[in-house]
Length: 483
Ligand code: NAD
Image (cartoon, rainbow, N blue to C red; front, top):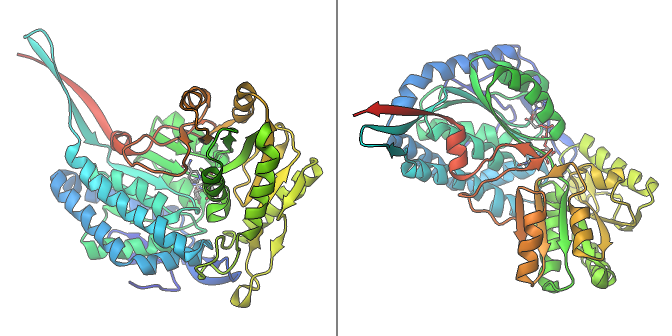
């Protein structure tokens, strides 16, 4: 596996330069320096990728599902075999601790390929016998060339979650990873070559959203767009895609409530709440950024939580004891710091954190921020309404179930929620009324790939995961036959 300082596009089975020979800097956020170059691809590269995908489609879609499944298994095995290099690459691109990439991101990427390699073998059509004179049956067919666009926070994991179901259903793919974290996608292209994926079946075009990304979205021969990223970008993509009636799946931002009742298992809740607030520097779309705590335990929670947050070590992502690494990029680092300033102007009281930290040794110029806890804000302020996507949480007390629900649902987002209570009836009652696509009760970030994944309200349209993703990447026809 070649950890090159020059990332190349993967088009028609080959690693190639962008046709315009323009390049973008790729930064290592923990040291604050450029460490590689990535293609600044444009329409010409996207057109070449779509052409390659169209040429590959007849043969790929005609393979048996077992043959396609076998190739996906090979890719999964090669991801596992290269786990260390991939985890280091992901950490270098993203700033997340290497231990986190090793334990979570990379295994989940190979899981994605393995899960869909198996799922397709269990996917079946349906038949509907009628009155003895007719019967109906369904036929699922791949769409053709599809586009997959992913963000920087869980680079390989989210990229592969789209690509795997798209490929196994017989589609050919033009994919774009985030320009902020492109290295693992580049390594994936090398893995696909080694696995014997036929040329043109998967094409990876690197570059900026408004050029490389938008050219995939706009291309008339790209039949569907599966996008994960910010809500504003989702709106731009939807405006382009909707009038063309392409299939579209949008997984967008969140402002997730973490609702803590007094009757919870306090120690278990505290331990998990530290993770759900600050894992990956709070840059997981499913992190709980608004912590709502029942008034009778609010002071106890505040004291213990702040005490534990202060102990979280922020530092070099290579160190096993760094619980938080670097913020992904300088612009995002500056955005998070400006959000903390805004919170103060809005009347927020910073209980801990709130400042940038200088890293040690090689990390002296890196972009690190202390885990930050803020109280005293109203629900309607910007801090509690807009996604910050960093190591910043607010805490607020509530008195009744009704108030907890009102606060939980009082944003435009509806991605995920967490509920902590030992009262099973209350858990079900509240969960049914929380406006979120995913609700965890007494746990967080537990993933079962068979389940639907996606958001309500401004957090997205459509569902990924399980058979939903297979369905998304296929057209279904109903055939009615007279006997
Ligand atoms: P982003 O929207 O800026 O970019 C996401 C991807 O879209 C990147 O590859 C980018 O290059 C591309 N892009 C940008 N503009 C585009 C355009 N006009 N046309 C086509 N492509 C374009 O998001 P980000 O900053 O990379 O990621 C963070 C966001 O992603 C957060 O809002 C987070 O909540 C969200 N997210 C959501 C989920 C989910 O499953 N709901 C998962 C992870 C991240």
